[in-house]
Length: 220
Image (cartoon, rainbow, N blue to C red; front, side, top):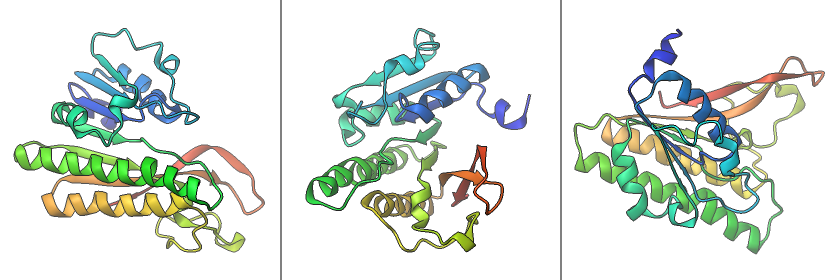
């Protein structure tokens, strides 16, 4: 067993956006690693891919809890704080990576789904950690490749420390803001919070795509 696999033994893991593609696959993999509890949360926002069918292999397991629907929007502190309090580790995968045009409707959607929901969720986490000063909560926030902005061809493949510039849509701005909020929580409370952007890994500048992914991690 790899070292990281053993790490999850007997841990309580909370996954926001846990019924989407990445979240559900993460939950299924974690179920093989003997965690004490997997807590899946997903508000099932229309057209973002969340589906109970994505976790059909594990949804009846005794150590799997699923909380879905609009009541479990990450902005809902009343519902989320008790779940955060249970957790040892949080994979914060909720949100949208949809490319949208610039407009009032798109701005309202992204502000609610990618900004306010995340800021309020992190505030709930911060409050739980203040109320429970000995709680060793670890948080990983999942961002997006678009946090780097429009990258010139000559700068590919993107380095982990590539600066954010030439941003193209609302979600790239929101995700960057939430990354900094995540790191602010870490710095303020001295807890282990990190941020990642999952990227398609390019083998060469000839645009040959590898099927794997790499993650930019900051704030370790």
